[in-house]
Image (cartoon, rainbow, N blue to C red; front, side, top):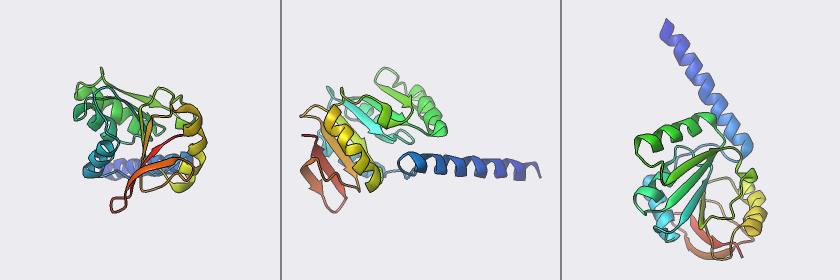
Length: 170
């Protein structure tokens, strides 16, 4: 019966984790890797770029940006379990020199050095985030959003079928 106790603890931790992230921006819903690559391609991510992923979850976007596109990447994650997972992942993959993960709230992080910002949040979160992106990002920065839009940013390109939107902040 010890396994039932372990299972109960794991379910409790998972539930707390889901509720915690939902309170600060969006629940964790992993983006399929094909869509991650489409987002990074649409933003024309390359070796000279610094990519920020807001609510980086399990780190798949920042890892892909570094491994496949040669960029440097920063993930910002408020869920302590996913933050720790990302730390382990980037260490195991040997990406510490190009990828870092920040534990915290992306509203409180300075994004001014970002070339590309990726996000898969909720519409209400994007609405709240828009002012920060306009204020902090350089005019030539690119913002790529999965599924949800930014009404006040300049839409550069969209993939309606995949629901991917590319913006400039100015």
